[in-house]
Structures are given as structure tokens and as C-alpha cells.
Length: 265
Image (tube, rainbow, N blue to C red; front, side):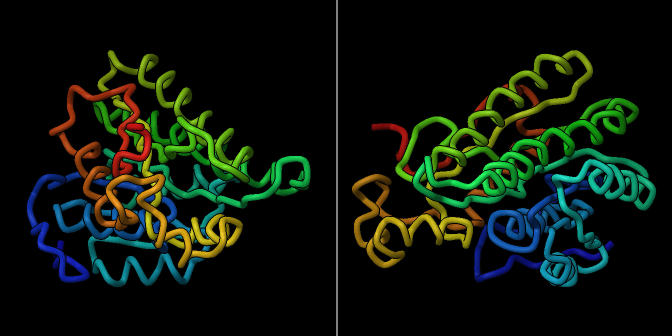
């Protein structure tokens, strides 16, 4: 298995924190998902890179090398989630980590949001995590345990303008993760929710336009994110790496917040 070097000039280093582990990362074509797939591979994991944009997933996998393969899938479709989960195990013999990270954020004034946006948001953000956990768990039970990581958001904890539907979906992920953690704690399957603040990824750009544009948001970001800058995808990937690794063996049922003090106020 080849190892990959750190991307983007980062100095996190290459190690063995996930040596021998097999991971699935959804939303791996861009942003936090891409950064996490790369980071997991740097630490010795084999990674299934899943994205609804098959070309983007393939680009991430090519950048990693023979420790990864790409799958084009819609995480809101149960059969597709089962298929890539089973394919992962068929290819590599086990499943240790499922990072259910794919999501959509389509902002709008609440009473004007059409049903198709409501449905798509709940289907991808909530059902995507439900299916990702549902089909990973049997393999993890056979393997003696594993780590489930579900991407929620600070908006699963606090509200922001124009994000009522998105926040509803992310709040659901908090309780889903806690419930799964309770159900499988004795079977050594851990489940945690990862809650990023404002991170510089495309999923936030439409919301930025409703707040006056990305330039305006970043010029005033210290008004809501006290660290005074957006997060970088690799910073969130490092938190996901901790949750994926055995270093977090006592962490389950938690909401792990990485938000530059956004929710500390």
C-alpha cells in the first residue's frame, strides 16, 4: 500500500495513527471530506472516497494513490449506500471507520423554502447519516467494533438567519449520533457528531451571498467566530482523524465542536 504526502504545504506529518484501518468518507470530492480522505490515508488508512460528483471523488482517490478508490453515489439512496459499504468490505476485507460527511446547505427565508429543498436537505443530511451508519454497523459488529463519525454543524446547536431547514437537519444528527452511541457502546462501536463552525468550503458560499457576500462575511467574521478567520478543511480533518483513531477510544455519544469559539459566547 502506498503512502501519500501531506497536501497544501501542511506540516501535520505522515504517521500510522490509522494503520491497517479501512475507512469510508462521504462528500470526499471537496472541502472537509476531501481533506479527511487525504488525512486518513496519510496516517495509513485505506479509504473509499464517496461523492455524488464522481469525477471529484475520483480526483481525490487519484491524489491518494492505491490506498483509495472512488465511488459515485447519492447518500440519500439506501441501496447506493449499502452498495458502496459492501464494496468496501469486499475489496479490503473489513470496515473500521465510516465518516458520514456529505451534506447540502441551501439557505432561504423559512416560509419561502420549497418542498423540494426541504426534502433534499433532510434526505441528504439526515437520511445520508442514517443509511451510512445502518449499513456500516453490521460489518463493524463482525469486526469487533469501529468508529462512526457524523458531520453535524454548529447550526445543530445554535441558529443563524436563513438556515432553519439546514439547522433542523443538523440538530437531528446530534440526537442520531447520541442514540447510536447508546445502542452499540457495549459492542465497541463508537458514534460521535463533529460540529464545524464556519469553514472555507463551497457549502457555505450560498449562505454567504444572503449575508452580503463572501467578502463581507470574511471582513466581519470576528463578530460571530471570535478566532477571527474561517476554519480550513484540514483543521476539521484533523479532528475527524482523532475520532477515527484509537486515541478517542473513550469518546462516544459526544458532539465534538471545532468552531473558533463561535458557540462559546
